[in-house]
Amino acid sequence: MTAAACPEDLVRAVRAVGVRDERLLRAVRSTPRAGFVPAEHVAHAYEDVPIPIAHGQVTTQPSLSATMIEGLGLTGREHVLEVGSGLGYQTALLARMTADVVSVELWPDLVRGARRNLARQGIRNVEVLVGDGGRGVPEQAPYDAVIVSAAFPTVPAPLVEQLRLGGRLVQPIGTGGREEVVLFERTVIGLEPRQVLMLARFVRLHGRYGYPS
Image (tube, rainbow, N blue to C red):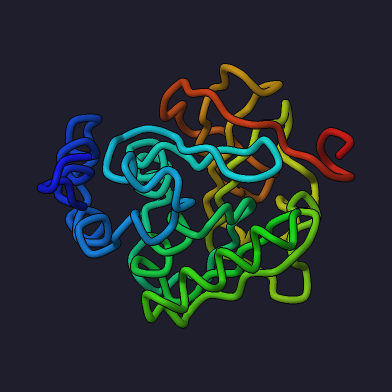
């Protein structure tokens, strides 16, 4: 990372993949990714790359996060469920785009890190919880939008049930390694695919409605 590297570098990367939502671009510009990565990887914070974190996980590449978030069509009034908090960078972007975010992460140490990072940035409209993301958080449903940052061949049934009618859900569909990132909408007949946003590599979804931990 050069001395000049900053969130603006990520704004350019996000624009380069076709993201045009000005609110989202402002969120990327105002969210210092260096505050959401392990200290040993700060030099790469403003590169458009995934960054390793604990438990064999990686953060989602910023341009990919932005593409997924843009697909949700957020207006600022939504109650959102995020599956896979990581260290909170994508959570922070969502928080700047919505009314509030409920984020679920399987590993307690990552939850502690995400909470700490979000608090340091003064982000308060987020609740980060330890849990099995595929189960969702039914006590806070229904959600206007759901974003899943891990791959599985199908969308977990609880997430569909917790999404309001007309709500949108984005999830990488596949076995973990090379997935279609699919935008779905809940209709009266169920969850309907609307668009493949891109192809990308994701870690696997673990838990009762994913792969064994």
